[in-house]
Amino acid sequence: MTASNATLDNGGPPPVRFAFDRRTWKEVAHLLGDFPVSLLAFVYVAVTVVAGVGLSVTVIGLPLLALGLAGARRIGRAERARARALLGVEVDEPSPLGRPEGGGLVPWVWSRLKDPVAWRTVLYSFVRLPWGVLTFALTLVGLLVLWPVLPFLAHAMASADRAMVRGLLSPSDELERRIAELESDRGVVIDTAAADLRRIERDLHDGAQARLVALAMGLGLAKEKLLEDPDAAAAMVDEAHGEVKLALQELRDLARGIHPAVLTDRGLDAALSAIASRCTAPVTVTVDLAERPAEAIEGIAYFTVSELLQNVSKHAQATRVSVDVWRADERLLIQVVDDGKGGARLDGGTGMAGLAERLGAVDGLFALDSPAGGPTTVTAELPWRARTAHGGR
Image 1 (cartoon, one colour):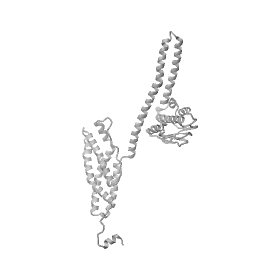
Image 2: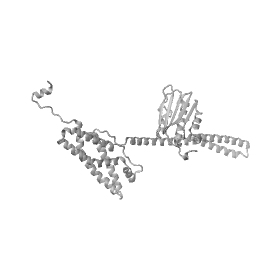
Image 3: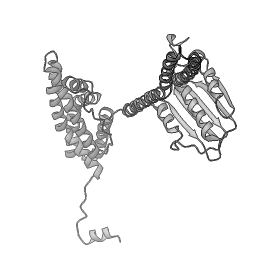
Image 4: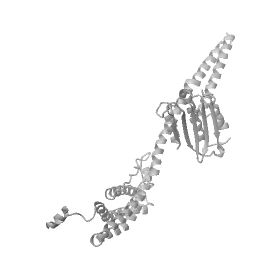
């Protein structure tokens, strides 16, 4: 005899318990709350947003509409919290709008007027009122009359609620991810451009500019000695001529570092072959491109290979290097392989992390495979953009 049978035999009452499980009662609570919540949201939207649209031809219309949309965002946040607590719907909060650049009323109003999250909440508030009336009525009837089928009815209506919350109140995952990436990439691009400008200024100040100053001084002294000591003046002019050659060479090297002429004139194949000849290890270059990419993409590909070959010369102790460049669908792929000692890392201080950031800033990818003992394989991807008509030669 079980304990329950013993209780019944002794004349005691059966244990008291709810007829439905906890999930059903939560769904019922959510459905009963749909009507009052949706009514309040509908009234708010009708008064603020609809009035703002109607008065948009006046001075106060657009600010009123912006305020209404800002409040609609708060309604969406409250509805997400209610669905999270009662329906178990995990919906991420959208990114905050933040303060618009420049401040002022007009930028603030404009940022709220173009907020897609707020407009989806407005649509949600309009759709929810008739649905809230229906779910409230059916749930109330189910509690009073149709309670045997209430769990199934409540679950079906709650599932529709979950779908509406996910569809209208959840942020776009892809959009949010791209916004975060672009904000990060913008900072990387700005920092990289600033570093490049500082490098160019330093190279000009310490190199060509110093030589040109010395050249001017030398020519001034030669001018003074021209009549009293022609031989000394001739020697000083010869020395100045040598300084001119060195200054021109430094300017050429600096220009090559900004954008080499061979890349502009002859493309990646010739430009990569030129930098390969300066590597300490023999380099095989293979460029398989039916057409040239856009100038910006071509320049990034050139400097990526240039920095990788510099790393090979400085750190790899390689005896053989291969550089392959090709196009696959809408991507430009670069692969540099060397048979050196390996062990390269993104955090190893060899500039790999900087390369990865620069490629990521233009929606590219950077992959490093460098086990200890080698070989090292670096694969880079860049978005393919066709060269415009004015970009050719």
